[in-house]
Image 1 (cartoon, rainbow, N blue to C red):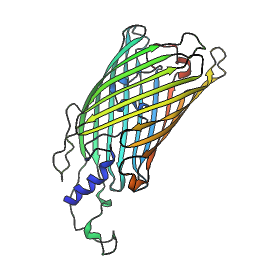
Image 2: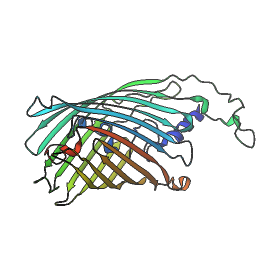
Image 3: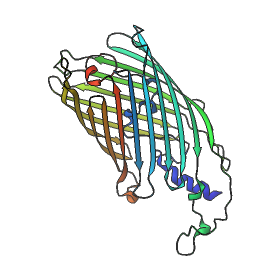
Image 4: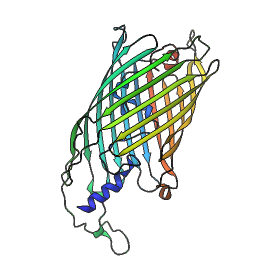
Length: 350
C-alpha cells in the first residue's frame, strides 16, 4: 500500500507548486477567465446579461503524460431590469481534472448565487454563496509496481501482485465570497478614459469535506482563502488600456501569489449608429506565479467572443526536469450583449 501513496503523492504534486497532497484545488494561469474558481460573488457580475466560458489547460507534458484540466462555466444576471438598486447573479461551473498516467481525476460541479447592490453611481458590492458536488476517481490499471521490473526495464505483462478495490469518493462542499467594485465611466464617447476596479475576498471549503479513499487515511480538504483585485485603466484620448491583476491563495500550508498585467489595444470600436462594426481589441502581457512560472499571454476580442492563450515557462526547481516547459492554457468566451457596446457606459462592473 505504501507504493500507492508514493505514486499518488508524486502524481498529484501538480496542483500548486508547494502542495504535496491531492487534497488541494486546481488553478488557472488566466484565472480571471474562470471567475467562479476565485470568488462565488463574481457570478453574474459583468456588463452584460449572459456569458459562457470554456477553458483547457495542459501541464508538464515534457516530463510525462500531460496533467489536463477541462472547465466550463456559464453565468448571468437575474432581475437586472426589475430592481433599481441591484440584482441577483446565478452561475454554474464544472471541471474535470486528470493527473497524468494514473488517471487520478477530480470532477466538480459548482452552483453559485450572488446578490449585487448598487451603493451609489460609482460603487457596487456583491456577496455570493457556492454549493458544490465533487467526485474523486482513479484508474489503477495504469499504476506501475516494483514487481513489474524485469531486471532491466518495466514490463507491463508481469503480474503486479497487488490487489485492492477502489470506489469513487463523492462529497459536497460549500464556499462564500464578497466583492467590491468602483467604476468611473468615460467622460466622452471618444475619451476612452474609463477607470474600473474590483477587489474580492472568498473562503472556500467551509466545512472541510473529507476526501478519504478506502485504501487511505482520512484526508480533509484544506479550507482556502482567496484575495483578488484587478483594474481596467483606460488611457485618456488613446485606444490603450492597462489591466493589472493580483491573486493570492492561502490553503493549508500552501501559498500562491499570481501577478499579471495585460495591455489592451482597441483595434475597432463598435459603430454606435450604423451597427456596421462590432468592435475588436487585442491584449498582450503575462502573469507571474511567484516561485513557479512566468506566463506570456495574448487575448483577442471580436464582438461577442474572446479568445485567450497563455504558456507557462517553469521557473521552480522542477526546471531541471522540464527545461522550463510548463504547459499551455486556452479559453474561449461568449458574452451577450456585445461588450463593446457596454464598455465604458457603465460605472458599475466591468
